[in-house]
Length: 364
Image 1 (cartoon, rainbow, N blue to C red):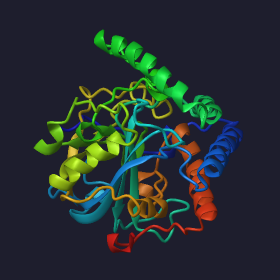
Image 2 (cartoon, one colour; image 1 turned 90 degrees about the vertical axis):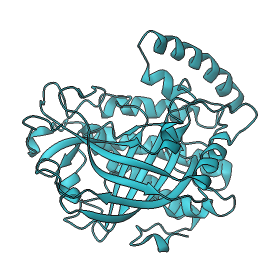
Image 3 (spheres, one colour; image 1 turned 60 degrees about the vertical axis):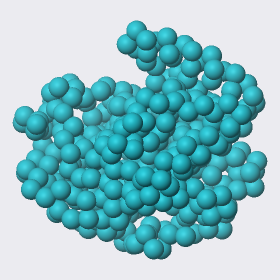
């Protein structure tokens, strides 16, 4: 079912705050603090957010033929197949024991996407989508995002044992909230997220994007039986620091997976705000509709001593892409410089140049 009367994109849908540049500078400083702490600890630079990968897998994204005009926009205006690579992760900037319960993330890089490029993405042919297993972002604006990131920066590499104990307490509290139909994004970010299997989860962009002539949020829904049978399943990570990586590897090496990429068009700027990603857009007013299918064949999603090199060579950013899918809203604007800084820091510290692949064969 298509949305009725989707809102048309114009620059006026965004509201840039007068002190936004200062907030972004402070966000970059918080990223810097996290990166310097972890790189000195590990002797190796990792991402400032979503540092720990649980699996990297290659596949094919096929844009469906015959999409109606509202959906045949941007890279989805032309049916056909693209090479793609996904990265499954959790959100902190330090590499933690998997018994600390945290939100799952999935980053999707689509190759061979033509079109006018976003600033900083000139010369590339990739389109990145970064998603989390929840429909809303944890902060309403860049300033609140900064507060959250400062907290993460101050707790990076601090007392992992205490984090495990805190996670257990927060998970109990969060489970109680969920039992009465409530949940807390803040508690989940701090270690109270459900210990769900990442391959059974639906992943959401949370923040809005331009969708050609329109505005949309994007989500990746598991559809193959190998994945949907895992929805709601939990992973026992007791005394298994890399339990999630092991669980993902077991499924991917035997069965692979299939997902549908779906878009939710904006139909009302008041009820579906661009500048506040903590507001969930009504799926009743505008359901998610499938525009492409991601097929990932059976493969080894993690091999110790090898996949780490692939992970180092990859960088994901919502600003890697075409102008037809420009990220929108203050949180997204803040993520542009900060993610670029994180990738640049990793590249310099590790002596490993990061470039966007033209083909999957270029990945180590």
